[in-house]
Amino acid sequence: MTLKGQKSHFNVKFLKGYGISIKMQDNKIILKDGLNPFTDKQDSECWFVSNMPYEKIVLSGKGYISTEVLSLLNEKNRNVVLMDTFGKPVSFCNGMMNSLTATKYRIGQYDTLRNLRLTRARRKH
Image 1 (cartoon, rainbow, N blue to C red):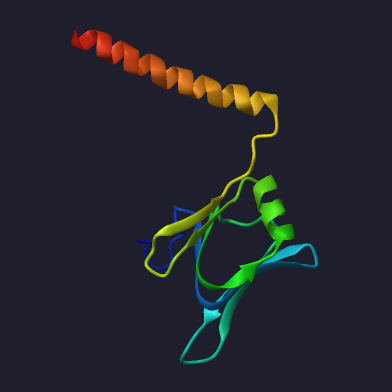
Image 2: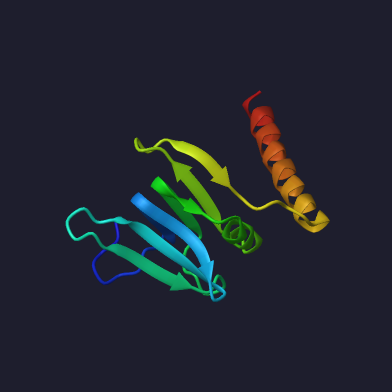
């Protein structure tokens, strides 16, 4: 929970409800939340992708996201998660590792984890 007047340390944007959308306009990403049933208004945010404070965008409801935005978000290592109305994840959209360096780095992480497990298993015997 984020305290009033404090910045969230999770860097997650949650869009919910009917009419949610993420689109491009004037080289900016437009994030629209669902319709408020009491005021019939939609909250909207506008960001350049390089200045966007969110690492993840979670969508739950009815709406759309453009393929242009998906591509740009993935390019800038921002994740998009689609959830059903009960909070169960339906889809994860993460960027591809397109460089050999990133792939080798990830393999090194797995090797380190395997070595830790082997070391711990040997200590138990």
